Image 1 (cartoon, one colour):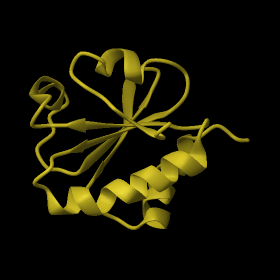
Image 2 (image 1 turned 30 degrees about the vertical axis):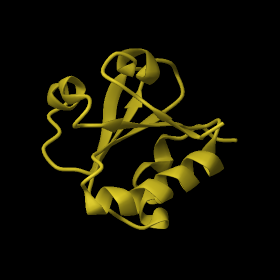
Image 3 (image 1 turned 135 degrees about the vertical axis):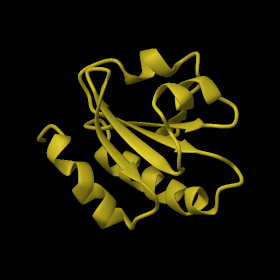
Length: 109
């Protein structure tokens, strides 16, 4: 099973609910930096499961959710806890730098 789930406008609210931190990658197929970031997100999701849940939302196919969260630039990563945005990360960055941006939100273990 893939460690990063595809998320849609319809599945979004349920996907971000719960106690586990949730990372959502807002991306589009035409976006070069999004393509560079995707394997980084995949690696982190695999390494951090089950302490982190990860998903990706295509902004072209799911404009409602992107609009609701004011996504203006992609890639944008939003980290949710309890269904609320607790961190926003915009643009590409290497794996270690990205991990350092949200590692403090992860449960220990």
